[in-house]
Amino acid sequence: MKKNKIYKMCNPVCLQGNIEKQNYFEGWYYKCVDANNKYSCAFIPGISTSTSKYKRHAFIQFIDNSNNLPLYIPFAIKSFSYSDKPFVLNISNCVFSDSKMIINIDHNDCKIKGKIVFGDFTNIERNIKLPTIMGYYRYIPFMECFHSIISLSHSLKGYMKINDRTIDFNNGTGYLEKDFGTSFPKRWIWVHSNTFNVKDTCLMCSIASIPFISKTFTGLICILYVAGKEYRFATYLKAKITKLLCSKNNLHIELSQGNYKLEIRSMCSDNNILIAPKNGNMNRKIIESMSAKIKVKLLKDDYVIFESITHNGCVEYN
Image 1: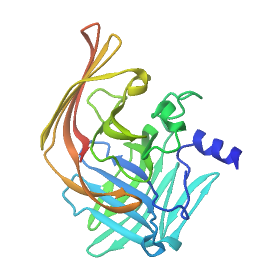
Image 2: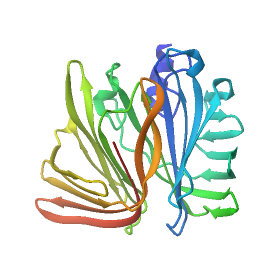
Image 3: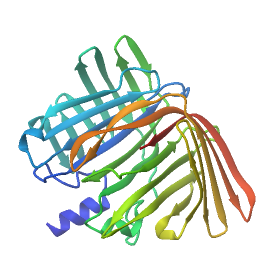
Image 4: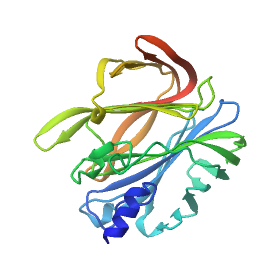
């Protein structure tokens, strides 16, 4: 049992919980962007449990930047199966793994079918003290929500047919992360893109209200990855949020850590509805944009050492 827990912690893509656990959720976020950076979508497979066995189910969510109706499709829990070695997740006729994704969805007025093969994953820096992006907080068992970045970026190969439209994902860009625990935070902001106008750049920034024992604190985890070098800003590294301005469509974040500063600005033009967990139940509605304009600027000793922009980033908030 202990060896299995260590293996899963060292391999965060694996299922961290189980379907028998009460008030629990676990979900994987597979993002895909075509080679022209015009079309982007995300598939989110997962499980949701509660104290009532009748509410337990697997699910697949789907959103994109083309104003297709967002999907939340529940499945009987018996349609869910998985393996850790190698990691493979099956929900009904769909397959999700760390090497490919096979989709067969026919739900109401939406049909999605296709196969996408993933290239080598770009991993974040990890060690025994900082096993995931959450740092040493990953070792605290009573955290409300755990977050892991599985791949900052990887290549894509394949096609996806969405209703009557066929999307060519060959030479596209993928991203994979996951969350698990009991509930999403009461308040949070999440920003992501790995398709900036400067190649080999990835940004992920999350700011959230974190309940901890009898108190609540504002937690920060952020990575800017540029051409093989990782710049990480985090609460556990004593980073500070020096500015946070958020409105319905605009966001302005400024962070500082040591002699580095990071500025993030975003402007959203679309809003998709996603379903998020509370006490294991998928019953909260949140907003995510998949066509956000995001500007990022990195400074060292007050001198700009990097800046870039994207027009199909993701911004999520509640």
